[in-house]
Image (cartoon, rainbow, N blue to C red; front, side, top):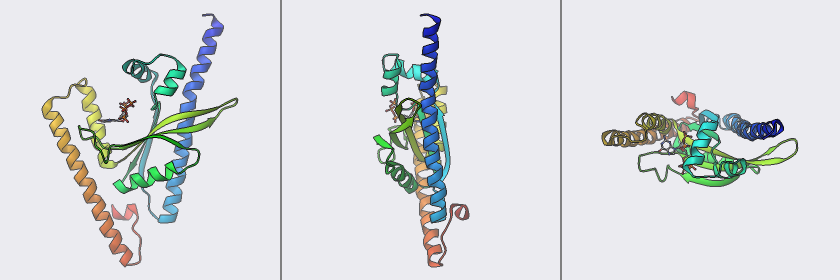
Length: 221
Ligand code: 0O2
């Protein structure tokens, strides 16, 4: 290819990656609005923290190889749907579904796929609610519908998933049987903790309501 070809390819690649950054900015803004407005109306904040990332070119290429896809922009755009990823961590399980519903209802968000690993945990114990959505990004000369993966989970689910992720990579994808069992047990404990925290939160709320007060996150814990 000539120098001009390289320049064109570079511009295309930059625009391609930028679109995912913009998608994350749009969704982060949406989450911030929900968080602030929800807190104002209900005097309670269901979101603990939010993290987002654009998948590195290296991980994109690894996934292309793993899925045996064609290595070109249209194929990557259509088949790799977690290049833009956002993770929302909540205090309680029922907040996860509230947040998912609030996002799903928004007119510019199209839900493409929903995977409920809370109702149906993965065999290793992994729990989270995953949404694959599309959001329009208005560029100077076109509109691009960008796929984004939204993972919503509790603090306990997140704690478990980040440790499991580390072990998974440390052992080069071959986790020894005793560690697999320990992790599964830890997932059960995380689940019990979630249930217990939700129960306590609900009971305190009932007490507070009887006293004519509403309980906020900060007051509870
Ligand atoms: P990373 O490094 O977190 O980006 P896909 O391969 O995405 O097309 P899949 O595997 O069916 O299809 O998607 P799924 O099940 O929705 O999982 C996507 C992401 O969820 C993963 O991304 C992880 O972030 C997370 N995840 C899924 N299963 C597990 C699990 O068992 N343990 C942990 N810790 N995380 C999990 P990546 O790209 O695999 O990895």
